[in-house]
Image (cartoon, rainbow over all chains, first blue to last red; front, side, top):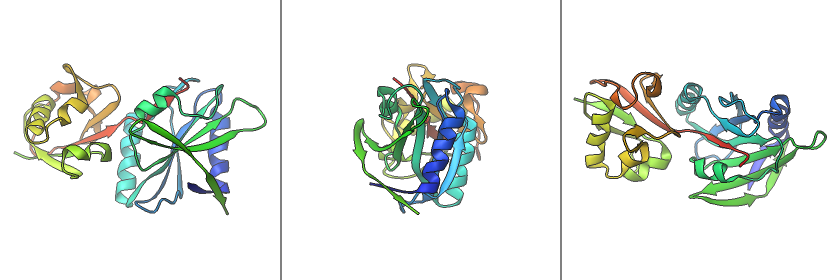
Amino acid sequence: MLKISRELRDMIIAHARADHPDEACGVIAGLAGSDRPERFIPMQNAERSPTFYRFDSLEQLKVWREMDDRDEEPVVIYHSHTATEAYPSRTDISYASEPQAHYVLVSTRDEREAEFRSYRIIDGDVTEEPIEFTE
Amino acid sequence: MAIEVRIPTILRSYTGGEKSVQGSGSTLSELLKNLDAEHAGLRDRLVDGEALRRFVNVYLNDEDVRFIGGLDTPVKDGDTVTVLPAVAGGAC
């Protein structure tokens, strides 16, 4: 299960809408081992593509070092699909490399209603999980 | 000669759970071969044939080695090499 505040959910959706039609991507950091997403970190999509995303390698180094300094880890890794459903694709699955993270997918294919779903992706296996929105 | 190599979570099965290991070599290529002698299989996760794998980021101190020589990047005592799997994906 992913427990996340409505505020963080809204920030993720706003980021996805702002970058549409390119895919948006980012991290929500939280204290290592807490499973609590707390700190919203939108990332550049170095691919700037409507069908692919990749964190810029130097930005990723900076953010990962910062998390390490703060005893944090990536609790949520999010990205958006701009014309397809909010479900992990084959490439999403093959590149998922943070086994403790909740992979959040947003779809901005509909102008009015964003889809927001969460998954665990471990060793190539995808499991959708329920989301509890907190205050 | 000691070069610190920081290992991401997903590769710590090769290092007995350690997040940092030491190695030696005068290029990144030599360093990875040196590490592989003690942590078998680690090099293959980073190198495909004779080139670094596309979706693994390797940094020498603050720089991405892709821009400073790839596997031929010179390394020296006191350097820190950091490995981070790329975070990427897409619609298909």
